[in-house]
Length: 259
Image (cartoon, rainbow, N blue to C red; front, top):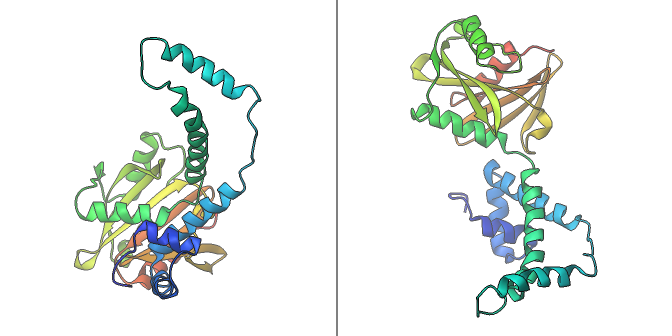
């Protein structure tokens, strides 16, 4: 089972305890080696626990009558079909519950590592382009400020480490503004950095936590990529590449600054 990703329904059945012992054992083995499916399970459990905590509010006693009265007036406008109230009054409760679940999902743990990984893959496939080409860090920092980013950026000089700056773009990561800049290394390897306002608390569980020079780092590995997150003030920084995982970590250690 470790050769493919199970469907979301099967992960849901795992969370609800509906799988047979054999299938549960197979899925446990897959989850132990797949961060992507592990985060999906975490998200499903978060929603399940959240809905269980939703407060139960009784509607006003006259609520059904008021809804039925409003719908009756609509029914009398010429339709001889079954009155709408027979469909919509029960549906109102279903819609309210669905809205609560949607709100929980929107507030749930963010899968930022996967979002950064998708951006990296899109850039490598030329599906995500850079706004400006420059190998000068200060020039790109001024570009980000000129484009209106509200936070201060710091474009790293990695030339001594074999990575030449290629360019940058003002991006959106998980719905928020992001400063994205890319490097090219030996063997045409790509290194990408993104900076955005946020917190390491938004990251899902499962990443490796390390500390270096008083700075906390969170390291995720998936689909052949290594992603290293850390904070500089109120800004989250992340380096991602498909080179050796420890190389990416050491690059982050070398350039991270405690603010």
